[in-house]
Image (tube, rainbow, N blue to C red; front, side, top):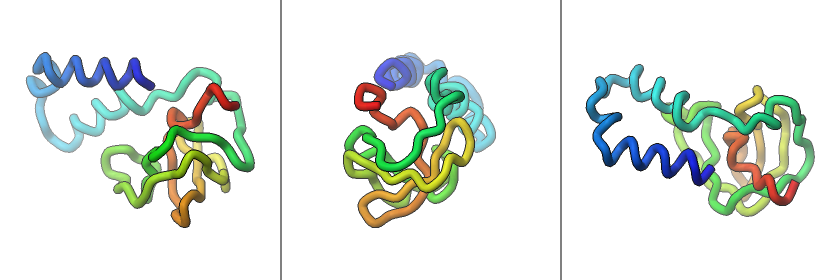
Length: 110
């Protein structure tokens, strides 16, 4: 996750992303390119029950980091309700139910 964040910051500060069109479609495509790629083992794993996540991981109203709309933040744990697709899980945490990107799961605690 840190590598993706550093890469995105480098691209933003270098002007690479801003040199592109800023239409909503392009922003969504950059989101998929930079942030919406799960770790390779997430394609195979089916996480269930209570799982550790990084503190304050965003919870979205729909499985989309750009247009999903953040509705809350997870504590350090979430209860997995179902796997939506390889990239997103429907979870409950801190009284909020919504979607969390699979990259927010704390791999060191799995």
